[in-house]
Length: 230
Image 1 (cartoon, rainbow, N blue to C red):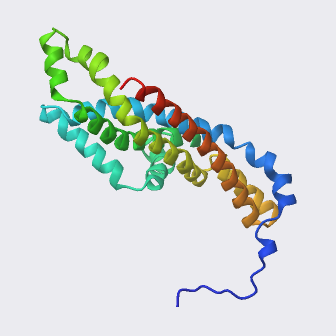
Image 2 (image 1 turned 45 degrees about the vertical axis):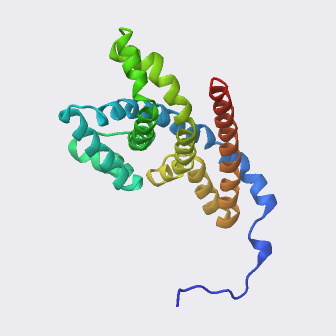
Image 3 (image 1 turned 90 degrees about the horizontal axis):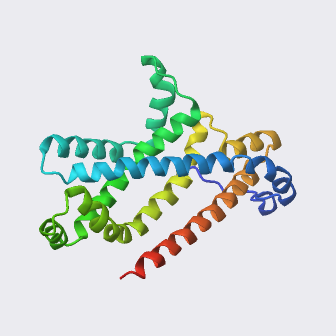
């Protein structure tokens, strides 16, 4: 009924170690671009997300509602569709982006919506008494945010922000759909060349895994570093 057949399963054909080893250097050529898109996209998301969080919690409706609309749109639409709009759609209005630029802008502006909500929740978790104390001491709004609120909110935001980055790192595989030569794109080329899709895609998965483990270790380090100030 579901179109699944289990006849003639050949376990030994699931993964060919020799073929994977021979194609590993080629697939690894996609790692730098994968990291570039993920890291730069995350940095863009952090910057935009910070100001979105402030606008989202603003008392001014002309700041609050555009921020809410942006967050709602980005969280409510598939990132792949957004990438297609940037890469294939923008030339219609006279704006042409390279595949890499479209991927960086797409992932950066999309992740900003999720980061904004994390930042907003982290900022709101800081006691309002901190704001009142800073105001009584003569601190300006930005001095209060930078010196008092942000250090406390950062400790709370690190775990969910780390998860956003790990999701972003894995989601860069979607950039293969707009011809960015990252890990999955290289694996697709190798699969077509060797006629062994299963081995090449498993190899790609085995490359993503240690990358996420490295950044998970970095996340753990940052959590411990900020927690020692409690």
